[in-house]
Image 1: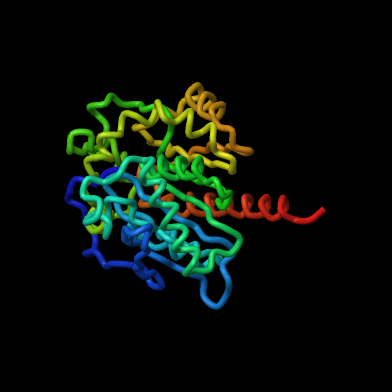
Image 2 (image 1 turned 30 degrees about the vertical axis):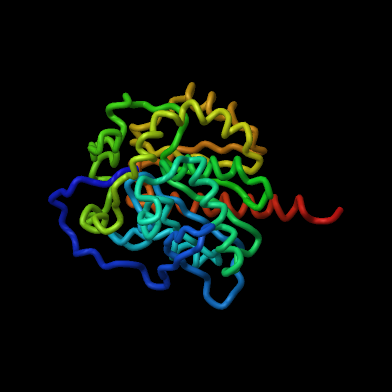
Length: 304
């Protein structure tokens, strides 16, 4: 969700992007959004994954460089998927256009405009699938609720619930400060060098985004009630920002109108799950859920 505090962390210097991953920009109704793209070689993609980072991060969150197999982008491309990790409004190139960021409702509008531009330029196969982390999960769920054209296959979110497990003062970025232990969890959950590599993918949380931190528990029921695609949520074993006890999860499930809601826990993981040792395990489960959503979509669309 938030950027790490520099630590004494052995490892190599940051190396940039994974092979086969390139930077692109999209025109989102006049705003330029940047992102990282990976595509399968020599074949039409099965579908397109749109990955949305959390607060205080950038698109590079989904292209982890601290160890082999961490990158969602390269994994997805090898499995026949197009993967776009998008810098959310207020991050990357759009920070110049939105220096204060945008509200969730505004980000949803901008995201849908970016998806229009992306679908015009790139192969998306059987459809679009949102995969998001933390604050990006709030955007993914909001965008799914706003998906009036029904073009999304499903949504997979990690590190985002509906009830905070911390006080307002303890929320990462709430006052411009970050408690990395609460945001990340135990250091043993991440490969050596993680924090050195992560210095290239962190960014300040925009002011308007930070100001909306406390509104999510109030917004969530209305958003969840409008979602009409399958949803999967993952909470890491060491998640400390969100409540994920049995009572909270039962309440969370009941608020959704989605045709399918899956809630799972990822053992051996901290909040920033896509940068930890279990990143590949989580990504494989998320992409397996995408495959289930794709089959369900194709089955529903098939003639009788």
